[in-house]
Image 1 (cartoon, rainbow, N blue to C red):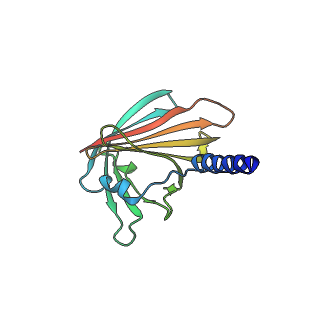
Image 2: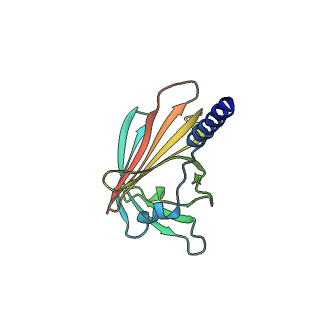
Image 3: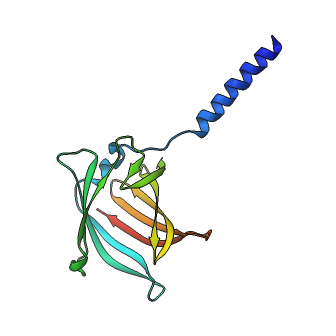
Length: 168
């Protein structure tokens, strides 16, 4: 009986630990609701590989939710001083909330100021080298940033590739 009880306790403990380590981070469309509406105004700071210096240019962003699919948003980027660089992209959230914009969601945290921090990763190439990208989206009602960090294959240190920072 004592052995059976010990086995049951060990099994319950193992299942509890397994459930805790297997927790999944996901996001919902409600987590992204604050992005919609009035235009975001700010800038893009990026690492210029040619000079090795950071450069900042003005950037504005308008985000609207798709009228036909609640899991899609249109990001309309404008660069007032470089209008030829203007672009639009559609960002999608998977139905299970685990993939955003083709990136794997690894963190979804509510910050002390009420903003939401979403962190994602995605493999890619940076300056013709295989890399892992880490995107950090800080979403507040009047402040929004997207930071892109890069980890080059075979290295151990992340570096900041660029950061968009907007307010409204």
